[in-house]
Length: 377
Image 1 (cartoon, rainbow, N blue to C red):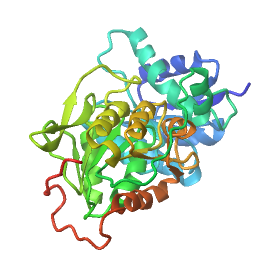
Image 2 (tube, rainbow, N blue to C red):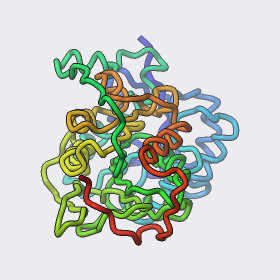
Image 3 (cartoon, rainbow, N blue to C red):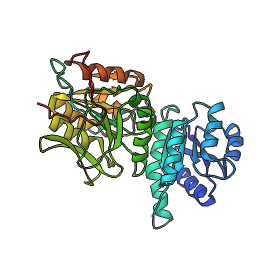
Image 4 (cartoon, rainbow, N blue to C red):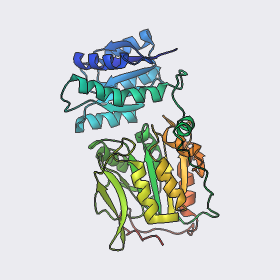
């Protein structure tokens, strides 16, 4: 059986050894080589021919971003996972690396009591991503969304589509692995006069979500912020759930507002897409549009069931343009998606559905994040 060949790049000999030991203990993985900095890594890539590179962000001589840029010149399709510290500097560098073509990222274990706990963090976070990104290409037995759903007997029967498309009053997006780049492709295409608010769950830790919102805001026509309790949902503005907090919508004093809480993780995630989508279905009923994009696991599947049961609409990103077709694959294979589309077609379809039932020539004069959202009826 083939194994996934991995090149581990980190300037810390302790980290290199810990990561290598954790990976080598898995029968489907092989550590093909290790490097102490970017220059050594660039020399080793053609020598060891890895299937994926685990790349430290901060290194002497040639850092992770510089190394990534050089790798992309000769190996544009080689998967690269950035391995970063859970700090503002590490988050900024990681997001910059993602914008330059990194496939995904994992944060280094922090505040763990001993080496065993550190190894467990690596096994829980890094190994599943490696297998999800590389497994299908090598023919490894990675369960497909449909097979996994059937095996667990949770496949939802196809629900009847609404007889007509209801007016959309909110767009709710769920995304994970590959999400920052997918959002960077989608959100800047939404127009300034978007007549509805957008709420987003991107699986990310604290600090990362705030910086992601700031990066998207700088490139977008609509306003983009990290979500916070009491924010009034307004057309032409998007909110990203803050790291380590679930985000929900709720009616308060005749306004739709955001609330956050630290309830138990769902699907091992906090924030979780399911939590947000349930609240959207409860508040907006048939006037909601859920969009499930690239990501590992099945977070969003149960939430989409609630959206469909309330009469709302659902779009899913297709397999070809997803880094990992887990989350959207579960939704598509459960028969919940109204359409399954490539990433570059999602914006047009979102806008078509949002504008359905509205005057196509209507002009929204309010600046983004300034007009109060109405309560759906």
